[in-house]
Amino acid sequence: MKSTQFATLLFSALLALLAGCATAEPEIESPADITVSELETKMRTAMDPDGRYAKAKTFIQRQIVSTERFLDDPEEQVVEVKFERPANFRLTTLDDNVPVSGLIVSGNNGWMVDYSGERIVELTPEQLDQLKILSGISNPDNSLTRALRDIHICLCRIGEQEFYKITGQSRNSDNPVAIYIDKKDFLIRRIKAVFQIGSQSIRYDSTIRRYSLYEGVMIPAETTVIQNGQEQTTRVIYYKLDAIIPASDFRPPVF
Image (cartoon, rainbow, N blue to C red; front, side, top):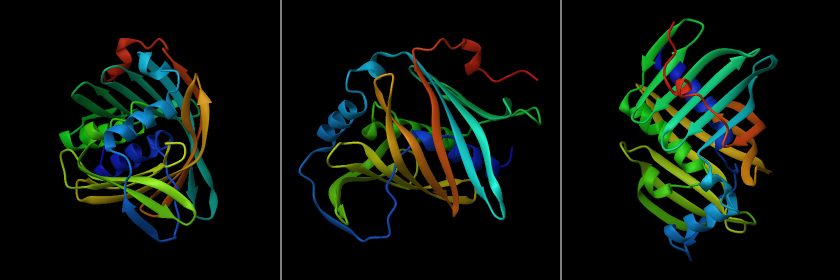
């Protein structure tokens, strides 16, 4: 699987886990009135008010990903995410309920899977790092300090809206990440990042359109992602905590 194919898979699939608030208005920054640690606590409470996610051992989420195409109808695919604590993760993209591609992470090992071509490629440490950044930022545990280094926090006003803006770099690279958290409800509204996949630079900007309560957890239910000029939208259709997931789901398939 080529690096460009990995980039498309990686950033198409994690979209509904991410959030944002795209705008062309200028950003006015000022000193924050809260620490990063205090902000993380408020974010966890906002997304997981009853501690349901914190107590769960697994979850399954399904979403519809729609990709805009020039002079054609959008392409729609179903993306299924399975997670098991502490570090097992599986993401599968399906066309007409048939697996097309996948990402599987088991602890510190990971694989890209091309089901149609029956090929498996091991993830590099860089690719694993970027997966962990996106999933770590967006889940209700809100592990900003585990996902980023050189973290800076400030208040940010865009038009009439106020945000806490977190900036930093991924743990194992110099790639910048910016996260915008609503000052009123402490929910993530935007994530901007630059990722390097081989020689390809990916400019990523995701915007949350709507949150919904699933299983007692606030989930980004509708999201728009712009990636190097290409626009995708996602809509969550299923979310289940403590779902039964076979151990074999976190191992690469045998073709």
